[in-house]
Structures are given as structure tokens and as C-alpha cells.
Length: 309
Ligand code: ADP
Ligand code: MG
Image (cartoon, rainbow, N blue to C red; front, side, top):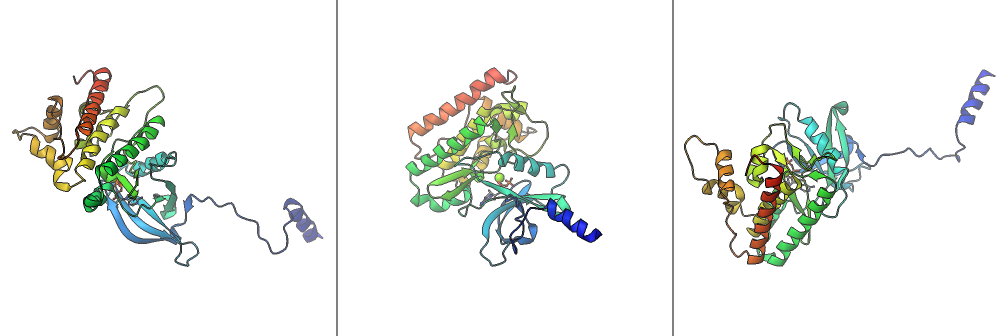
């Protein structure tokens, strides 16, 4: 009788299900099971992270979707896991046609490490793509890429984020007519009452893409991203050829002087009003746009950071 009573209780607490049907479990589509993630190739790596092409194949029939999976490089040390965590938190808030889509996360080692799962863009970054496609890519197309980068950045700014690593290596190509901004590893969120973000941690920075106020005062304004956009536009106009990329060109332009670090020389160079050279065949209208971009960043600097000018 006790068994009958217990069973009746259980039956009362559970909804009636048609015979043969199991309750549908709530599945979170943004949680990927590491068992079904199979590595196919390496896609690239930067300072902290590496990105791999994987197939997510829960049915084991080889028809699962291709995804890009970002994890920390094995030799990354210290507080770095929180970098990826922050990148995940940023990406999951962003929805825009020109921003790489977040798909979810995958936990490993009992939740001690987390990987970021995003959409896979087969053509890779502009830095990989453009040098190979130089002859098929005319000025109109380059400017259209620039416009799409602006649209993605405009959206990012409207969400009060500062990217801090806008560069051709971090713009991915979906197809020949669409590009998307990626790599939110250095992205910061501005507090409601602030118009800039002060960086405290000392990590390696993409200094040749940075405006003076970032190099000198570690202050990042939305307009500091505009400066990096100017450098990215320079990369676009040079078809991302490595010989004309900002780093070697700046290094050649910075006059070597005994005992001075590259960063000090770069800051002096920029404060002197000197800039990257105008790329060959770059039309005046684009060159003037680069001028606007420069003035803009400097102006913010005057009002926002008196220490510099
Ligand atoms: P890091 O923070 O280490 O710089 P990124 O997110 O910039 O990492 O990725 C490194 C490289 O991997 C990129 O420059 C690009 O070539 C490639 N990559 C990154 N994400 C994707 C993706 N979703 N699809 C295709 N390639 C990607
Ligand atoms: Mg990167």
C-alpha cells in the first residue's frame, strides 16, 4: 500500500505525458559540449588567444556545423583566463551585421577553462585576404569595407564599448562584399558617467595603432578607436601588404636615437604632427578623410587630456 501511495504522489506531481514521449529537456543552445567539438585546423593566434576551426557534431554523422573556437594559449599565465571571460561577456551583448556573431561557450576541465565559440568566417582576416585579392579588389570595394567597419564601430560605440584593437588583422571577411569586426579581447566598457576608460593593467599593446592619449596617459576615448580606424584605413589602402604595414613603416620613420625606447620615439613623432605616409594611389578625398580622423582624435585629446598638448 505504501508503494501505491508513493506512486500516486509521483503521478500527481508530474504532468500527463502521452505514452512513449519523454519530457523535452530544456537545452541551452549557447552551451557547447566539448565531447562533440572536433578540431579541423588552426585559424590564427595573437598575444593571448588562439583560434581553431572545429566541427560541432553532436549527432556524430559528420554533418555538424563549422565554428571558430577561441581559447587561451597554453603558455598564457597569471590572470589571463579573465581576459577571455571578459571577451565572452562583451561578445554576447553585440548584435550587428558587421560584428562577428557570438555562438556560445564550451567548458572544459570541470568548468575551470572556458572556450569562446563564434561563427566561422572562411576567408579569414583582411590581413590574410587582401594581399591575395589585390587584383580583384578595386577602390570602391575597399571603401565599402571601410564603410562597414565604420558601421560596426558606430554600433560598438553606441553600446559604450571601446574596442582598443581595431586593425586589419581583427577585421574578418565573410565574403567579397561583407566584412565584420572581431577580437574583443582588449575591449572595455565605459561606465555611464565617463567619456573614456583608463587602462590599468600592463599588457602588450598594439602601439602603432594607438592615438597619443592612449600611449601617454593610457586613456581610451571612443575617438581613440577613430584613430585606430585611420591606421586601419591606411592598411586597407595598402592592401595589407606586410612591407607597408604600420609597424615596419613607423619603425623606419622613427629616427633611431640612443637610449630612447621605441614608444617614446613614437610619441614624439606623433606629437610633432608626423604620420604614416599617404599610400600610393590613395585618392585625395580619402587622404583628406584621414586628415579629419587625425584632427578629431587630437581635438578630443585637447579637451580630454591636458597632459599631452
Ligand atoms: P587574438 O586575440 O589572439 O588576436 P583573434 O580573435 O584576433 O585572436 O584571432 C586570431 C586570428 O584568428 C585572426 O586574426 C583571424 O585570422 C583568425 N580568426 C579569428 N576568429 C575567426 C573566425 N571567427 N573565423 C575565421 N578566422 C578567425
Ligand atoms: Mg587579434
